Image (cartoon, rainbow, N blue to C red; front, side, top):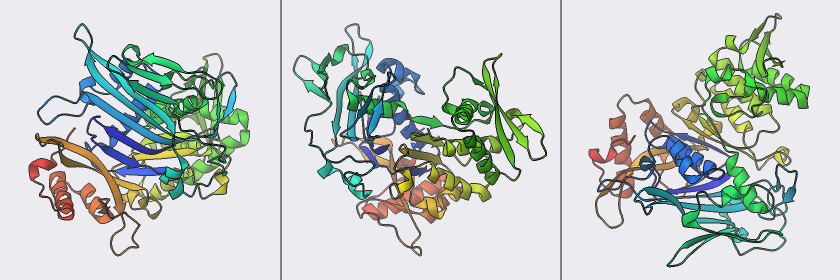
Length: 479
């Protein structure tokens, strides 16, 4: 679970920081940076397991387009990314080795720079990497969520640790990345200029348990934008039994659940019947000859048909209720446009599913369950107005920013601020120094046919709050 993210120099992010809860819904128009946040998380997750150069080239756009644009033209030469996380107290590797963690609260920092090699070709280099426990006396997120030492999420104090698990040491000659002793293992030193990947990506077992736990947390992040055509496809028998991009491997997930406990498939069918007007019984067939798993459904009258006959809405609902009932589902789920194919009258059911897919620290029912977190991107003014969702909503917008040396103005950068109830409703506690917008202001912005005028209206509101003057040229959208 990510509790804080900091971004600087990546796409539309400059000096950006955001504290996150188990459920976070980000609303805003196209091109304001909602998907860029997911792109930054995807980059971090892949860097925890892959080569730096290939990871950057796998992202959307040219490598240069991933760096923040400069006021005078061109782009920055450094990207800084940092997260704070809460991980499960126990970690297990693929060899069956299991370790208990003393410090499930950790902070990870990474800086990637662009530098020419001796032949003049541009290289991406890890210039800074850091992983360390978050000191409990300075852990404001844990205190805000009332997580007590000795509870199910934070182990009892058994002595502190002042040294990091990963650190960076710089001299005039070179930069060295160090993976420090953790448990019984020694340290590893790597010259940054010669490293093609992060130190964290090399943590593949419990030899260095805390680094391995952080890497496993990041490698497990999932990104969903459910595609009905993908959901209709059978799963290869050798494919993972986890839902991946687009909803791939849904039949394998249901087959795994059925094999572990046949009642789970009944629970999925019952849950799906509550979401749809026509009750359906979900079934999976193992086609051993073709080496695949096929998703099927049976109607109340006994008719049986394949997933290809199901509607887009039914398939999306099936994927969501499968995740809700899967005891192995855990970690971070980044969900694009969850309201797609959902009738507005059914959005209340969707909000309940999103809440069930997240950890509630106030409920004892989650004590034995894996940590779960959902971050959603949405355009829906209806979804964010639901009372159970409003307290989790952030409004993403573009804001002008001038560089610290006064050398000109950057293109607009992404900011995300809380959405609060309208004045006639009970107010949420928002710190005075945090800019926020009311629900009515955000709804009007999202419904406006003229987003340029709507942005000017919001810009004027920000100017009144900050005492600045914002002109029309400063509110243009960045793609």
